[in-house]
Amino acid sequence: MKLFDVYSLLDMEPVKAQGAYLWDKAGQEYLDFYGGHAVISIGHTHPHYVEKISEQLSKIGFYSNAVINSLQVELAEKLGALSGYDDYSLFLCNSGAEANENALKLASFTTGRERVLAMRSAFHGRTSLAVTVTDNPNIQAPVNKTDKVSFIPFNDADALRKELSSGEYAAVIVEPIQGVGGIQVATDEFMLAAREACDASGTMLIADEIQAGYGRSGKFFSHQWSGVKADIITLAKGIGNGFPIGAVMISPSIPAKKGMLGTTFGGSHLACAAAIAVADVVKDENLVENARVMGEKIMEGIAGVSGVKDIRGRGLIIGIDLSVPQADFRKVLREKHHIMTGLTGQYTLRLLPPLMIGQTEVDRFVEAFRATAQEMGM
Image (tube, rainbow, N blue to C red; front, side, top):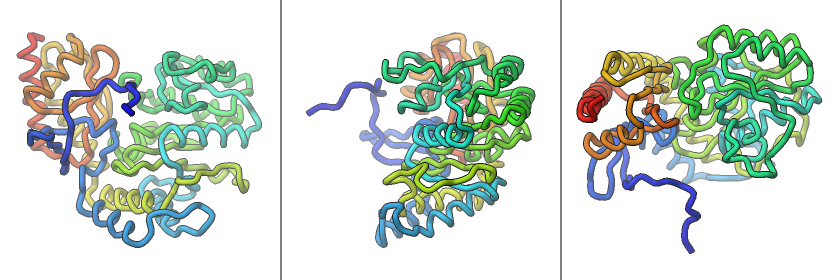
């Protein structure tokens, strides 16, 4: 048997990791400025994280949601305190796509409505309902096609108000910072308009914080930059630092009914232990503030570099528009300077480093970025 060939793989295999660094089979060190798609939040193999997972596994790793699991309660309390949403409820699942699936179902259950409003260039996952609100027909199979989802341009407050005035939508789902869509940041005007229009029409506002949330933007949630509160918030990636876990945070105004949501593996003992350890480190090491400060330093360090057409983002979710194809630039960064970065589109470099990076890592990246720009004649 062979692997199903759906991934374009880089020619390197990490076999060891620590902090913000990776090592391949040959022992070559790489600075990780991508964090495995924004997953690595507290750094690779953090001692507290390793200890808590190992300790939990020696006790019990899994039992179903048919029994009490006090670790789920502990995680909910920590998330509430960290985020400022301590009056919300928590539903645990396994991934970002699954979190969005449940968020959309919950909005439909609560409102009794069938339609969803989503954004152009959005990415919310690849499972059946999540992919219908993802603006990419190339990953929508025929079975995913539906007329119950409408798309409007991102940051178009007038279009949003017009659509919601019909009163037929169960939810608006939005990434406050679009990741796959090119690190596009929602304006305060747009987020405030979304909140007001949702309130006026009885529509649920879902904030997809899977990539930009959990401290990455320099606030715990990226929508908090606009001063709004979402009815439903979805989490994954950074919450587990590599252990698969997703979460839905739910407004106290939304009633729960037995059996309306469910999952076999979601919120297992081991997953909760991982997420609790991450929450501990985010708080104790002040990683939300660190993300804000280090992100500003990165942007300042590459501002004015020839061939850089635009720099967008907040904290440690950064998009850099280049005058050359990002694939070529990224290859030089990786092969010559041994720095891992991400991509979006043809010309945009995407940076999603661990939230614990420091000045040493920022300086190394800025120096390598400037050198690569010069080497490529930008």
